[in-house]
Length: 271
Image (tube, rainbow, N blue to C red):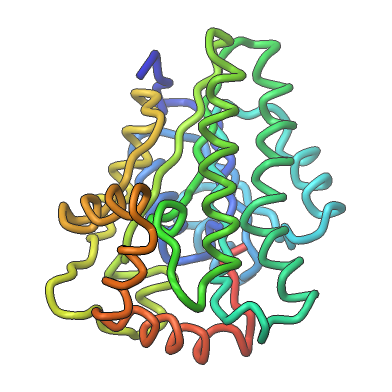
C-alpha cells in the first residue's frame, strides 16, 4: 500500500458507467467530489447520469480501437482511470464463435490494457494518478462454462499487478477490485440465478466502498466477497482440481449454464 489520491476535485474517467455497478460507482465518486467523465453504450442511461451527476458523457464501443482512441482524445488528461466495462463472457468454449471470443477478450482485457497504458503515459508527466481495474473473483477461481471470461479476468489480474510494479515510485498507483456475486446489479444479478446453499452475495455498497478505498489508499488488490468465498478462492489457487470437484458438487456448472443461456445469445455487455 502506498500514497493514494484524494477524489475531491479529481478528474475521473469511468468506463462501463451504464451498467448497474458502473452507475453505483459513478454516484459514489460524485459524493466524494470527483469530476466525472462517463462512457457506456446506453444513451438513455448516459443522459440520465449527465443530468444527475453533472458529468461529461461519451457513447463508445470499447471493443473497437477507433472508439477507444476517440474517447481518450476527448477525455484528455485524467487523474483517475477506472476500467469498469465488462462482458459476461459466459458459454462453453466450443459453443462460442471466433467473433464471440474476440469480443469478450477485447472488452475485458485488451481495452483495459490499452487504455491504462495511454492514461499512464499522460499521468507520468505529472507524477500523480490512480488506475483501477474492475476484475472479478472469476480472475482467481475458474469454473465450467466461463473459461473465456476466466481467461480475461486471470489475465487482467496479472496485468494489473505487473503494471503496479512497473509504475512503483512513479507517483501512479494501480489497483484491482475483484467483486464476487453482487446482489443488487451487475452480471450476476441480471442473470436471476440463485446461489447454492451456503454461499452469500455481496452488497453493492461494499463494491463501491472498495473502489473508493483503492483510489484513496492505493490498495493493490481488494477481493469484495463474503469470507467463505474469499477462503475458497485462496484454496482454489493452490488446489484447482479439488476446487473443480467442489464446484461440481455444489452445482456451479448449473449456475454457469443458466448464465450462458441468458447472456450469450445476446452477448450483453456493460461496455
